[in-house]
Length: 611
Image (tube, rainbow, N blue to C red; front, side, top):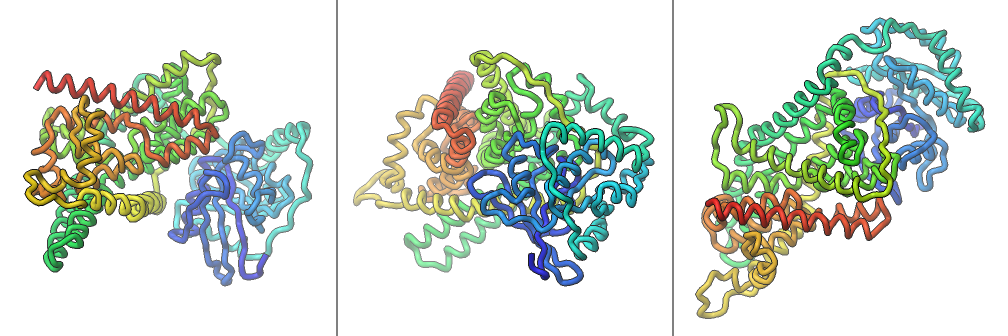
Protein backbone atom coordinates (compact mmCIF):
# COMPACT_ATOMS: atom_id res chain seq x y z
CA UNK A 1 0.00 0.00 0.00
CA UNK A 2 1.27 3.44 -0.94
CA UNK A 3 1.15 6.13 1.75
CA UNK A 4 -0.49 8.43 -0.80
CA UNK A 5 -3.18 5.98 -1.96
CA UNK A 6 -5.55 3.48 -0.46
CA UNK A 7 -7.44 0.71 -2.26
CA UNK A 8 -10.89 0.17 -0.71
CA UNK A 9 -13.46 -2.53 -1.46
CA UNK A 10 -17.10 -1.69 -0.70
CA UNK A 11 -19.11 -4.79 0.21
CA UNK A 12 -22.58 -5.41 1.62
CA UNK A 13 -25.95 -7.08 1.21
CA UNK A 14 -28.19 -6.01 -1.67
CA UNK A 15 -30.28 -2.91 -0.89
CA UNK A 16 -27.95 -1.69 1.88
CA UNK A 17 -27.21 1.60 0.09
CA UNK A 18 -23.71 0.55 -0.93
CA UNK A 19 -23.94 1.86 -4.49
CA UNK A 20 -25.49 5.13 -3.27
CA UNK A 21 -22.49 5.51 -0.94
CA UNK A 22 -20.15 4.73 -3.84
CA UNK A 23 -21.86 7.42 -5.97
CA UNK A 24 -21.68 9.92 -3.10
CA UNK A 25 -17.92 9.40 -2.72
CA UNK A 26 -16.87 9.15 -6.36
CA UNK A 27 -19.52 11.11 -8.30
CA UNK A 28 -18.67 11.10 -11.99
CA UNK A 29 -15.13 9.78 -11.43
CA UNK A 30 -16.13 6.20 -12.19
CA UNK A 31 -15.05 3.52 -14.61
CA UNK A 32 -17.37 0.65 -15.57
CA UNK A 33 -15.98 -2.48 -17.20
CA UNK A 34 -16.05 -6.26 -16.75
CA UNK A 35 -13.76 -8.43 -14.65
CA UNK A 36 -11.19 -10.32 -16.69
CA UNK A 37 -12.57 -13.59 -18.05
CA UNK A 38 -16.14 -13.08 -16.80
CA UNK A 39 -19.17 -10.93 -17.64
CA UNK A 40 -19.67 -9.54 -14.13
CA UNK A 41 -19.69 -5.72 -14.11
CA UNK A 42 -16.79 -3.98 -12.41
CA UNK A 43 -17.24 -0.44 -11.04
CA UNK A 44 -14.28 1.52 -9.73
CA UNK A 45 -14.10 5.18 -8.70
CA UNK A 46 -11.61 7.67 -7.28
CA UNK A 47 -11.83 10.12 -4.44
CA UNK A 48 -9.26 12.60 -3.09
CA UNK A 49 -9.33 12.66 0.73
CA UNK A 50 -8.71 15.94 2.64
CA UNK A 51 -5.18 14.80 3.48
CA UNK A 52 -4.34 14.47 -0.21
CA UNK A 53 -4.51 10.67 -0.14
CA UNK A 54 -6.07 9.11 -3.24
CA UNK A 55 -8.83 6.62 -2.42
CA UNK A 56 -9.45 4.01 -5.12
CA UNK A 57 -12.88 2.53 -4.38
CA UNK A 58 -14.17 -0.72 -5.85
CA UNK A 59 -17.94 -1.32 -5.66
CA UNK A 60 -18.27 -5.12 -5.38
CA UNK A 61 -21.45 -7.04 -6.29
CA UNK A 62 -23.96 -7.26 -3.43
CA UNK A 63 -24.19 -10.57 -1.61
CA UNK A 64 -25.93 -11.98 1.45
CA UNK A 65 -23.11 -14.37 2.30
CA UNK A 66 -19.55 -15.33 1.40
CA UNK A 67 -20.81 -18.90 0.90
CA UNK A 68 -20.92 -18.18 -2.84
CA UNK A 69 -23.75 -19.64 -4.96
CA UNK A 70 -23.38 -17.39 -8.01
CA UNK A 71 -20.56 -15.81 -10.07
CA UNK A 72 -21.30 -12.39 -8.52
CA UNK A 73 -20.92 -13.76 -5.00
CA UNK A 74 -17.80 -15.72 -5.94
CA UNK A 75 -16.09 -12.57 -7.21
CA UNK A 76 -16.96 -10.64 -4.04
CA UNK A 77 -15.62 -13.48 -1.89
CA UNK A 78 -12.41 -13.98 -3.91
CA UNK A 79 -11.53 -10.26 -4.08
CA UNK A 80 -12.10 -9.80 -0.35
CA UNK A 81 -9.98 -12.88 0.33
CA UNK A 82 -7.27 -11.70 -2.09
CA UNK A 83 -7.52 -14.79 -4.32
CA UNK A 84 -9.10 -13.34 -7.49
CA UNK A 85 -6.53 -13.55 -10.34
CA UNK A 86 -5.42 -10.25 -11.82
CA UNK A 87 -7.10 -8.14 -9.13
CA UNK A 88 -5.06 -6.30 -6.49
CA UNK A 89 -5.77 -7.18 -2.87
CA UNK A 90 -7.78 -4.38 -1.18
CA UNK A 91 -5.96 -2.47 1.58
CA UNK A 92 -9.25 -1.99 3.41
CA UNK A 93 -12.74 -3.49 3.27
CA UNK A 94 -15.63 -1.17 4.06
CA UNK A 95 -18.62 -3.32 4.95
CA UNK A 96 -21.85 -1.35 4.44
CA UNK A 97 -24.84 -2.40 6.56
CA UNK A 98 -28.42 -1.14 6.68
CA UNK A 99 -28.86 0.25 10.18
CA UNK A 100 -32.60 -0.51 10.06
CA UNK A 101 -32.01 -4.22 9.45
CA UNK A 102 -28.91 -5.27 11.38
CA UNK A 103 -30.38 -8.70 12.15
CA UNK A 104 -29.72 -9.66 8.53
CA UNK A 105 -26.59 -7.60 7.86
CA UNK A 106 -24.47 -8.35 10.94
CA UNK A 107 -24.03 -11.98 9.97
CA UNK A 108 -22.35 -10.90 6.74
CA UNK A 109 -20.16 -8.42 8.67
CA UNK A 110 -18.93 -11.27 10.86
CA UNK A 111 -18.17 -13.38 7.79
CA UNK A 112 -16.08 -10.57 6.28
CA UNK A 113 -14.23 -10.05 9.56
CA UNK A 114 -13.21 -13.72 9.60
CA UNK A 115 -11.23 -13.24 6.36
CA UNK A 116 -8.45 -11.59 8.36
CA UNK A 117 -8.47 -8.29 6.43
CA UNK A 118 -8.70 -4.70 7.77
CA UNK A 119 -12.41 -3.89 8.00
CA UNK A 120 -14.48 -0.78 8.76
CA UNK A 121 -18.23 -1.10 9.31
CA UNK A 122 -20.37 1.71 7.84
CA UNK A 123 -23.82 1.85 9.43
CA UNK A 124 -25.81 3.31 6.57
CA UNK A 125 -29.34 4.80 6.62
CA UNK A 126 -28.82 6.03 10.18
CA UNK A 127 -31.30 8.87 9.62
CA UNK A 128 -34.03 6.34 8.76
CA UNK A 129 -33.10 4.21 11.77
CA UNK A 130 -33.48 7.20 14.13
CA UNK A 131 -36.80 8.20 12.58
CA UNK A 132 -38.10 4.70 13.33
CA UNK A 133 -36.94 4.90 16.94
CA UNK A 134 -34.06 2.45 16.49
CA UNK A 135 -31.22 3.14 18.94
CA UNK A 136 -27.76 1.68 18.22
CA UNK A 137 -24.96 1.87 20.78
CA UNK A 138 -22.23 2.46 18.21
CA UNK A 139 -19.23 2.50 20.64
CA UNK A 140 -20.38 -0.75 22.25
CA UNK A 141 -20.99 -2.36 18.86
CA UNK A 142 -17.49 -1.34 17.78
CA UNK A 143 -15.99 -2.77 20.97
CA UNK A 144 -17.78 -6.10 20.66
CA UNK A 145 -16.99 -6.46 16.95
CA UNK A 146 -13.37 -5.41 17.41
CA UNK A 147 -13.42 -3.07 14.41
CA UNK A 148 -14.18 0.62 13.72
CA UNK A 149 -17.87 1.49 13.23
CA UNK A 150 -18.99 4.78 11.64
CA UNK A 151 -22.39 6.24 10.79
CA UNK A 152 -23.29 7.20 7.22
CA UNK A 153 -26.28 8.58 5.33
CA UNK A 154 -25.44 7.86 1.69
CA UNK A 155 -28.35 9.87 0.31
CA UNK A 156 -27.32 13.17 1.93
CA UNK A 157 -24.51 15.53 1.03
CA UNK A 158 -21.84 15.16 3.68
CA UNK A 159 -23.41 11.88 4.82
CA UNK A 160 -20.10 10.04 4.38
CA UNK A 161 -17.94 12.53 6.29
CA UNK A 162 -17.33 10.21 9.25
CA UNK A 163 -16.33 7.40 6.89
CA UNK A 164 -13.95 9.66 4.97
CA UNK A 165 -12.27 10.80 8.16
CA UNK A 166 -11.88 7.21 9.35
CA UNK A 167 -10.40 5.75 6.15
CA UNK A 168 -8.18 8.83 5.69
CA UNK A 169 -6.44 7.95 8.96
CA UNK A 170 -4.52 4.89 10.00
CA UNK A 171 -5.71 1.60 8.51
CA UNK A 172 -7.19 -0.52 11.32
CA UNK A 173 -5.49 -3.73 12.32
CA UNK A 174 -6.93 -6.91 10.85
CA UNK A 175 -8.50 -9.54 13.06
CA UNK A 176 -6.89 -13.00 12.91
CA UNK A 177 -8.19 -15.13 10.05
CA UNK A 178 -10.64 -17.74 11.33
CA UNK A 179 -11.50 -21.17 9.92
CA UNK A 180 -14.60 -21.58 7.79
CA UNK A 181 -16.47 -24.72 8.79
CA UNK A 182 -20.04 -25.68 9.59
CA UNK A 183 -19.64 -25.24 13.36
CA UNK A 184 -18.20 -21.74 12.97
CA UNK A 185 -20.96 -20.72 10.54
CA UNK A 186 -23.64 -21.91 12.97
CA UNK A 187 -21.94 -19.91 15.72
CA UNK A 188 -22.41 -16.72 13.69
CA UNK A 189 -26.15 -16.71 14.36
CA UNK A 190 -25.57 -16.87 18.11
CA UNK A 191 -23.07 -13.99 17.87
CA UNK A 192 -25.57 -11.87 15.94
CA UNK A 193 -28.23 -12.45 18.60
CA UNK A 194 -25.80 -11.43 21.35
CA UNK A 195 -24.75 -8.28 19.47
CA UNK A 196 -28.36 -7.22 18.84
CA UNK A 197 -29.33 -7.79 22.45
CA UNK A 198 -26.39 -5.77 23.75
CA UNK A 199 -26.31 -2.87 21.28
CA UNK A 200 -29.64 -2.39 19.47
CA UNK A 201 -33.05 -1.25 20.68
CA UNK A 202 -35.71 -1.68 17.99
CA UNK A 203 -39.37 -0.77 18.72
CA UNK A 204 -40.67 -2.63 15.63
CA UNK A 205 -39.13 -4.87 12.99
CA UNK A 206 -40.51 -2.99 9.96
CA UNK A 207 -41.41 0.65 9.38
CA UNK A 208 -45.06 1.62 9.82
CA UNK A 209 -45.15 3.38 6.44
CA UNK A 210 -43.70 0.27 4.73
CA UNK A 211 -46.42 -1.90 6.23
CA UNK A 212 -49.14 0.55 5.17
CA UNK A 213 -47.89 0.71 1.57
CA UNK A 214 -47.29 -3.05 1.36
CA UNK A 215 -50.91 -3.73 2.25
CA UNK A 216 -51.72 -2.27 -1.17
CA UNK A 217 -48.64 -2.99 -3.31
CA UNK A 218 -48.40 -6.65 -2.24
CA UNK A 219 -52.14 -7.34 -2.33
CA UNK A 220 -52.81 -10.26 -4.71
CA UNK A 221 -55.42 -8.24 -6.65
CA UNK A 222 -54.77 -4.54 -6.03
CA UNK A 223 -50.99 -5.09 -6.16
CA UNK A 224 -51.16 -6.55 -9.67
CA UNK A 225 -53.46 -3.71 -10.74
CA UNK A 226 -51.02 -1.13 -9.36
CA UNK A 227 -48.11 -2.81 -11.17
CA UNK A 228 -50.05 -2.87 -14.46
CA UNK A 229 -50.94 0.82 -14.12
CA UNK A 230 -47.35 1.76 -13.27
CA UNK A 231 -45.92 -0.03 -16.31
CA UNK A 232 -48.67 1.33 -18.57
CA UNK A 233 -47.94 4.91 -17.48
CA UNK A 234 -44.20 4.37 -17.99
CA UNK A 235 -44.71 3.45 -21.65
CA UNK A 236 -47.16 6.29 -22.15
CA UNK A 237 -44.51 8.66 -20.79
CA UNK A 238 -41.80 7.23 -23.06
CA UNK A 239 -43.73 8.34 -26.11
CA UNK A 240 -45.46 11.45 -24.75
CA UNK A 241 -42.33 12.97 -23.16
CA UNK A 242 -39.63 11.64 -25.45
CA UNK A 243 -41.24 12.11 -28.84
CA UNK A 244 -41.11 15.95 -28.95
CA UNK A 245 -37.39 15.89 -28.09
CA UNK A 246 -36.79 13.16 -30.70
CA UNK A 247 -38.50 15.26 -33.37
CA UNK A 248 -36.44 18.30 -32.39
CA UNK A 249 -33.15 16.38 -32.65
CA UNK A 250 -34.17 14.86 -35.99
CA UNK A 251 -35.09 18.26 -37.42
CA UNK A 252 -31.85 19.73 -36.09
CA UNK A 253 -29.69 17.07 -37.74
CA UNK A 254 -31.63 17.43 -40.99
CA UNK A 255 -31.02 21.20 -40.98
CA UNK A 256 -27.35 20.77 -40.07
CA UNK A 257 -26.78 18.09 -42.71
CA UNK A 258 -28.35 20.21 -45.43
CA UNK A 259 -26.20 23.24 -44.54
CA UNK A 260 -22.97 21.23 -44.33
CA UNK A 261 -23.74 19.57 -47.68
CA UNK A 262 -24.39 22.98 -49.25
CA UNK A 263 -20.77 23.94 -48.57
CA UNK A 264 -19.43 20.80 -50.27
CA UNK A 265 -19.16 20.03 -53.98
CA UNK A 266 -21.65 17.52 -55.34
CA UNK A 267 -20.36 13.96 -55.35
CA UNK A 268 -19.88 10.84 -53.24
CA UNK A 269 -18.36 12.73 -50.27
CA UNK A 270 -21.35 15.06 -50.05
CA UNK A 271 -23.69 12.06 -50.17
CA UNK A 272 -21.71 10.29 -47.43
CA UNK A 273 -21.87 13.30 -45.11
CA UNK A 274 -25.49 14.23 -45.75
CA UNK A 275 -27.17 10.85 -46.38
CA UNK A 276 -24.84 8.52 -44.52
CA UNK A 277 -23.68 10.42 -41.44
CA UNK A 278 -26.34 13.06 -40.77
CA UNK A 279 -29.17 10.99 -42.26
CA UNK A 280 -28.27 7.67 -40.64
CA UNK A 281 -26.60 8.54 -37.35
CA UNK A 282 -28.77 11.60 -36.82
CA UNK A 283 -31.92 9.52 -37.10
CA UNK A 284 -30.69 7.00 -34.49
CA UNK A 285 -29.35 9.68 -32.13
CA UNK A 286 -32.75 11.35 -32.20
CA UNK A 287 -34.20 8.45 -30.21
CA UNK A 288 -31.86 8.98 -27.23
CA UNK A 289 -34.48 11.06 -25.31
CA UNK A 290 -37.06 8.25 -25.48
CA UNK A 291 -34.46 5.72 -24.32
CA UNK A 292 -33.45 7.97 -21.41
CA UNK A 293 -37.10 8.45 -20.39
CA UNK A 294 -37.49 4.66 -20.16
CA UNK A 295 -34.25 4.32 -18.18
CA UNK A 296 -35.33 7.13 -15.87
CA UNK A 297 -38.45 5.28 -14.77
CA UNK A 298 -36.65 1.95 -14.39
CA UNK A 299 -33.98 3.58 -12.19
CA UNK A 300 -36.62 5.40 -10.11
CA UNK A 301 -38.59 2.18 -9.56
CA UNK A 302 -35.40 0.36 -8.57
CA UNK A 303 -34.15 3.08 -6.22
CA UNK A 304 -37.55 3.43 -4.55
CA UNK A 305 -37.57 -0.20 -3.39
CA UNK A 306 -40.58 -1.12 -5.53
CA UNK A 307 -38.93 -3.60 -7.91
CA UNK A 308 -38.24 -6.34 -5.30
CA UNK A 309 -41.91 -6.09 -4.33
CA UNK A 310 -42.94 -6.49 -7.95
CA UNK A 311 -40.76 -9.63 -8.11
CA UNK A 312 -42.42 -10.99 -4.97
CA UNK A 313 -45.87 -10.12 -6.31
CA UNK A 314 -45.28 -11.87 -9.64
CA UNK A 315 -43.76 -15.02 -8.12
CA UNK A 316 -47.00 -17.05 -8.30
CA UNK A 317 -47.70 -15.94 -11.88
CA UNK A 318 -44.15 -16.72 -12.96
CA UNK A 319 -44.28 -20.16 -11.33
CA UNK A 320 -47.17 -20.96 -13.65
CA UNK A 321 -44.87 -20.47 -16.66
CA UNK A 322 -41.87 -22.29 -15.22
CA UNK A 323 -40.05 -19.35 -13.60
CA UNK A 324 -39.85 -17.74 -10.17
CA UNK A 325 -40.11 -14.14 -9.01
CA UNK A 326 -36.30 -14.19 -8.87
CA UNK A 327 -36.37 -13.99 -12.68
CA UNK A 328 -38.31 -10.72 -12.64
CA UNK A 329 -35.43 -8.30 -12.10
CA UNK A 330 -33.16 -9.87 -14.79
CA UNK A 331 -36.12 -9.79 -17.18
CA UNK A 332 -36.91 -6.18 -16.28
CA UNK A 333 -33.24 -5.29 -16.88
CA UNK A 334 -33.66 -6.78 -20.34
CA UNK A 335 -36.05 -3.94 -21.21
CA UNK A 336 -32.91 -1.80 -21.23
CA UNK A 337 -30.73 -4.44 -22.89
CA UNK A 338 -30.84 -8.23 -22.91
CA UNK A 339 -27.11 -8.45 -22.17
CA UNK A 340 -27.17 -7.16 -18.55
CA UNK A 341 -30.46 -9.03 -18.09
CA UNK A 342 -28.80 -12.32 -19.07
CA UNK A 343 -25.81 -11.49 -16.91
CA UNK A 344 -28.19 -10.79 -14.02
CA UNK A 345 -29.44 -14.39 -14.11
CA UNK A 346 -26.33 -15.40 -12.19
CA UNK A 347 -28.30 -14.62 -9.02
CA UNK A 348 -30.67 -17.51 -9.92
CA UNK A 349 -29.15 -20.54 -8.21
CA UNK A 350 -31.28 -23.22 -9.89
CA UNK A 351 -29.66 -24.09 -13.29
CA UNK A 352 -33.01 -24.97 -14.90
CA UNK A 353 -34.68 -21.67 -13.94
CA UNK A 354 -31.56 -19.76 -14.96
CA UNK A 355 -31.45 -21.31 -18.45
CA UNK A 356 -35.15 -20.60 -19.01
CA UNK A 357 -34.67 -16.97 -17.98
CA UNK A 358 -31.64 -16.62 -20.29
CA UNK A 359 -33.54 -17.99 -23.28
CA UNK A 360 -36.59 -15.73 -22.83
CA UNK A 361 -34.75 -12.55 -21.77
CA UNK A 362 -34.24 -11.42 -25.42
CA UNK A 363 -38.03 -11.35 -25.87
CA UNK A 364 -38.23 -8.41 -23.49
CA UNK A 365 -38.35 -5.24 -25.60
CA UNK A 366 -34.85 -3.79 -25.28
CA UNK A 367 -34.13 -0.10 -25.80
CA UNK A 368 -32.50 -0.86 -29.17
CA UNK A 369 -35.95 -1.76 -30.54
CA UNK A 370 -37.37 1.55 -29.38
CA UNK A 371 -36.02 3.61 -32.33
CA UNK A 372 -37.65 1.17 -34.77
CA UNK A 373 -40.95 1.25 -32.87
CA UNK A 374 -40.92 5.03 -32.58
CA UNK A 375 -40.16 5.49 -36.28
CA UNK A 376 -42.90 3.18 -37.55
CA UNK A 377 -45.50 4.24 -34.97
CA UNK A 378 -44.86 7.89 -35.78
CA UNK A 379 -45.19 7.21 -39.53
CA UNK A 380 -48.26 4.92 -39.55
CA UNK A 381 -50.23 5.42 -36.31
CA UNK A 382 -52.19 8.69 -36.18
CA UNK A 383 -51.95 11.11 -33.25
CA UNK A 384 -55.25 10.32 -31.59
CA UNK A 385 -56.36 10.28 -27.96
CA UNK A 386 -58.43 7.40 -26.63
CA UNK A 387 -61.04 8.56 -24.08
CA UNK A 388 -59.46 11.99 -24.50
CA UNK A 389 -56.51 10.96 -22.28
CA UNK A 390 -54.42 8.10 -23.64
CA UNK A 391 -52.20 8.65 -26.65
CA UNK A 392 -52.97 6.01 -29.31
CA UNK A 393 -49.33 5.91 -30.31
CA UNK A 394 -48.41 5.20 -26.68
CA UNK A 395 -51.07 2.46 -26.55
CA UNK A 396 -49.52 0.76 -29.59
CA UNK A 397 -46.08 1.01 -27.98
CA UNK A 398 -47.46 -0.56 -24.78
CA UNK A 399 -49.06 -3.34 -26.86
CA UNK A 400 -45.71 -4.16 -28.46
CA UNK A 401 -44.01 -4.40 -25.05
CA UNK A 402 -46.91 -6.56 -23.85
CA UNK A 403 -46.53 -8.80 -26.92
CA UNK A 404 -42.91 -9.49 -25.96
CA UNK A 405 -43.92 -10.32 -22.37
CA UNK A 406 -46.72 -12.67 -23.46
CA UNK A 407 -44.36 -14.34 -25.93
CA UNK A 408 -41.83 -14.91 -23.15
CA UNK A 409 -44.53 -16.41 -20.91
CA UNK A 410 -45.57 -18.75 -23.72
CA UNK A 411 -42.00 -19.95 -24.26
CA UNK A 412 -41.51 -20.41 -20.51
CA UNK A 413 -44.74 -22.44 -20.31
CA UNK A 414 -43.62 -24.69 -23.17
CA UNK A 415 -40.21 -25.23 -21.57
CA UNK A 416 -41.86 -26.06 -18.26
CA UNK A 417 -43.92 -28.83 -19.86
CA UNK A 418 -41.13 -30.39 -21.94
CA UNK A 419 -38.48 -30.61 -19.24
CA UNK A 420 -38.12 -33.61 -16.96
CA UNK A 421 -37.73 -31.74 -13.67
CA UNK A 422 -41.24 -30.50 -12.72
CA UNK A 423 -40.28 -29.19 -9.26
CA UNK A 424 -40.92 -25.58 -8.23
CA UNK A 425 -38.65 -23.33 -6.22
CA UNK A 426 -40.01 -20.92 -3.64
CA UNK A 427 -38.81 -17.31 -3.70
CA UNK A 428 -37.06 -15.99 -0.60
CA UNK A 429 -35.82 -12.39 -0.69
CA UNK A 430 -35.45 -9.28 1.44
CA UNK A 431 -37.87 -6.42 0.84
CA UNK A 432 -36.03 -3.12 1.40
CA UNK A 433 -37.68 -0.08 2.93
CA UNK A 434 -39.37 2.38 0.61
CA UNK A 435 -37.29 5.47 -0.05
CA UNK A 436 -37.34 8.52 -2.26
CA UNK A 437 -34.84 8.19 -5.13
CA UNK A 438 -32.03 10.71 -4.95
CA UNK A 439 -31.30 12.97 -7.89
CA UNK A 440 -27.56 12.17 -7.81
CA UNK A 441 -28.09 8.41 -8.17
CA UNK A 442 -30.70 8.83 -10.91
CA UNK A 443 -28.47 11.28 -12.79
CA UNK A 444 -25.44 8.97 -12.61
CA UNK A 445 -27.53 6.02 -13.80
CA UNK A 446 -28.90 8.02 -16.74
CA UNK A 447 -25.42 9.27 -17.62
CA UNK A 448 -24.02 5.74 -17.69
CA UNK A 449 -26.87 4.45 -19.87
CA UNK A 450 -26.65 7.42 -22.21
CA UNK A 451 -22.90 7.02 -22.65
CA UNK A 452 -23.33 3.31 -23.45
CA UNK A 453 -25.78 4.27 -26.20
CA UNK A 454 -23.49 7.00 -27.55
CA UNK A 455 -20.50 4.65 -27.59
CA UNK A 456 -22.54 2.20 -29.66
CA UNK A 457 -23.61 5.08 -31.88
CA UNK A 458 -20.04 6.14 -32.63
CA UNK A 459 -18.74 2.57 -32.84
CA UNK A 460 -20.65 -0.25 -34.48
CA UNK A 461 -23.53 1.94 -35.68
CA UNK A 462 -21.19 4.44 -37.37
CA UNK A 463 -19.34 1.64 -39.15
CA UNK A 464 -22.53 -0.06 -40.29
CA UNK A 465 -24.03 3.24 -41.44
CA UNK A 466 -21.01 4.00 -43.63
CA UNK A 467 -21.13 0.41 -44.97
CA UNK A 468 -24.82 0.77 -45.83
CA UNK A 469 -24.13 4.09 -47.59
CA UNK A 470 -21.38 2.40 -49.65
CA UNK A 471 -23.62 -0.54 -50.59
CA UNK A 472 -26.44 1.84 -51.50
CA UNK A 473 -24.23 4.13 -53.63
CA UNK A 474 -21.97 1.80 -55.60
CA UNK A 475 -21.86 0.77 -58.35
CA UNK A 476 -23.70 3.62 -60.00
CA UNK A 477 -26.55 3.17 -62.46
CA UNK A 478 -25.47 2.13 -65.98
CA UNK A 479 -25.94 4.45 -68.89
CA UNK A 480 -29.53 4.56 -70.06
CA UNK A 481 -30.91 3.18 -66.77
CA UNK A 482 -34.63 3.75 -66.27
CA UNK A 483 -34.98 2.76 -62.60
CA UNK A 484 -33.66 4.62 -59.53
CA UNK A 485 -29.87 4.34 -59.26
CA UNK A 486 -30.02 2.58 -55.88
CA UNK A 487 -31.68 -0.44 -57.47
CA UNK A 488 -28.48 -1.03 -59.44
CA UNK A 489 -26.29 -0.84 -56.31
CA UNK A 490 -24.94 -3.70 -54.20
CA UNK A 491 -27.71 -2.96 -51.71
CA UNK A 492 -30.35 -3.32 -54.40
CA UNK A 493 -29.06 -6.72 -55.51
CA UNK A 494 -28.72 -8.02 -51.92
CA UNK A 495 -32.14 -6.71 -50.91
CA UNK A 496 -33.94 -8.25 -53.89
CA UNK A 497 -32.30 -11.62 -53.18
CA UNK A 498 -33.50 -11.50 -49.56
CA UNK A 499 -36.97 -10.39 -50.62
CA UNK A 500 -37.72 -13.91 -51.86
CA UNK A 501 -37.51 -15.06 -48.22
CA UNK A 502 -39.39 -12.15 -46.64
CA UNK A 503 -42.01 -11.31 -49.28
CA UNK A 504 -44.64 -13.58 -47.61
CA UNK A 505 -44.51 -11.33 -44.53
CA UNK A 506 -44.70 -8.11 -46.56
CA UNK A 507 -41.09 -6.89 -46.57
CA UNK A 508 -39.83 -5.07 -49.65
CA UNK A 509 -36.18 -5.25 -50.63
CA UNK A 510 -35.27 -2.15 -48.60
CA UNK A 511 -36.69 -3.62 -45.39
CA UNK A 512 -35.12 -7.01 -46.12
CA UNK A 513 -31.75 -5.31 -46.55
CA UNK A 514 -32.11 -3.37 -43.27
CA UNK A 515 -32.47 -6.66 -41.35
CA UNK A 516 -28.80 -7.47 -41.99
CA UNK A 517 -27.19 -4.60 -40.00
CA UNK A 518 -30.02 -4.94 -37.45
CA UNK A 519 -28.56 -8.33 -36.56
CA UNK A 520 -25.41 -6.53 -35.40
CA UNK A 521 -27.37 -3.85 -33.53
CA UNK A 522 -31.14 -3.52 -33.78
CA UNK A 523 -31.23 0.26 -33.84
CA UNK A 524 -29.12 0.26 -37.02
CA UNK A 525 -32.25 -0.81 -38.90
CA UNK A 526 -33.37 2.83 -38.62
CA UNK A 527 -30.03 4.13 -39.87
CA UNK A 528 -30.06 1.57 -42.70
CA UNK A 529 -33.57 2.55 -43.80
CA UNK A 530 -32.63 6.23 -43.59
CA UNK A 531 -29.52 5.67 -45.70
CA UNK A 532 -31.29 3.54 -48.33
CA UNK A 533 -34.27 5.86 -48.76
CA UNK A 534 -32.22 9.08 -48.64
CA UNK A 535 -29.66 7.74 -51.12
CA UNK A 536 -32.60 6.54 -53.18
CA UNK A 537 -33.69 10.14 -53.58
CA UNK A 538 -36.82 10.15 -51.41
CA UNK A 539 -37.89 13.65 -50.38
CA UNK A 540 -39.04 14.65 -46.90
CA UNK A 541 -38.19 12.88 -43.68
CA UNK A 542 -37.73 9.16 -43.25
CA UNK A 543 -41.19 8.74 -41.73
CA UNK A 544 -42.80 10.38 -44.77
CA UNK A 545 -40.73 8.22 -47.11
CA UNK A 546 -41.82 5.04 -45.34
CA UNK A 547 -45.47 6.08 -45.22
CA UNK A 548 -45.37 6.72 -48.96
CA UNK A 549 -43.52 3.51 -49.91
CA UNK A 550 -44.72 0.86 -47.43
CA UNK A 551 -48.33 -0.29 -46.96
CA UNK A 552 -49.82 -0.41 -43.47
CA UNK A 553 -49.81 -4.23 -43.49
CA UNK A 554 -46.05 -4.30 -44.05
CA UNK A 555 -45.44 -1.70 -41.34
CA UNK A 556 -47.43 -3.67 -38.75
CA UNK A 557 -45.66 -6.86 -39.84
CA UNK A 558 -42.29 -5.17 -39.31
CA UNK A 559 -43.32 -3.99 -35.84
CA UNK A 560 -44.29 -7.53 -34.89
CA UNK A 561 -41.09 -8.90 -36.43
CA UNK A 562 -39.00 -6.72 -34.13
CA UNK A 563 -41.09 -7.78 -31.13
CA UNK A 564 -39.90 -11.39 -31.59
CA UNK A 565 -36.94 -11.19 -34.00
CA UNK A 566 -33.71 -13.13 -33.35
CA UNK A 567 -31.52 -11.08 -31.06
CA UNK A 568 -28.36 -9.21 -31.97
CA UNK A 569 -24.97 -10.89 -32.25
CA UNK A 570 -23.84 -9.45 -28.90
CA UNK A 571 -26.74 -11.15 -27.13
CA UNK A 572 -25.96 -14.48 -28.79
CA UNK A 573 -22.34 -14.12 -27.69
CA UNK A 574 -23.45 -13.53 -24.08
CA UNK A 575 -25.71 -16.60 -24.21
CA UNK A 576 -22.74 -18.66 -25.38
CA UNK A 577 -20.54 -17.19 -22.66
CA UNK A 578 -23.06 -17.65 -19.84
CA UNK A 579 -24.19 -21.19 -20.80
CA UNK A 580 -21.01 -22.41 -22.52
CA UNK A 581 -23.20 -24.07 -25.15
CA UNK A 582 -23.58 -23.45 -28.88
CA UNK A 583 -26.70 -25.62 -28.69
CA UNK A 584 -28.42 -23.04 -26.50
CA UNK A 585 -27.38 -20.30 -28.94
CA UNK A 586 -28.93 -22.25 -31.83
CA UNK A 587 -32.13 -22.90 -29.83
CA UNK A 588 -32.46 -19.22 -28.93
CA UNK A 589 -31.92 -17.98 -32.48
CA UNK A 590 -34.09 -20.68 -34.04
CA UNK A 591 -37.19 -20.39 -31.89
CA UNK A 592 -37.19 -16.57 -32.09
CA UNK A 593 -36.88 -16.65 -35.89
CA UNK A 594 -39.85 -19.03 -36.13
CA UNK A 595 -41.92 -16.91 -33.69
CA UNK A 596 -41.10 -13.67 -35.53
CA UNK A 597 -41.79 -15.08 -38.99
CA UNK A 598 -45.04 -16.78 -37.94
CA UNK A 599 -46.41 -13.77 -36.06
CA UNK A 600 -45.45 -11.36 -38.88
CA UNK A 601 -47.03 -13.65 -41.49
CA UNK A 602 -50.32 -13.75 -39.57
CA UNK A 603 -50.38 -9.98 -38.98
CA UNK A 604 -49.50 -9.18 -42.59
CA UNK A 605 -52.05 -11.52 -44.14
CA UNK A 606 -54.85 -10.54 -41.72
CA UNK A 607 -54.19 -6.80 -42.18
CA UNK A 608 -54.18 -7.19 -45.97
CA UNK A 609 -57.50 -9.02 -45.80
CA UNK A 610 -59.06 -6.35 -43.61
CA UNK A 611 -57.71 -3.32 -45.46
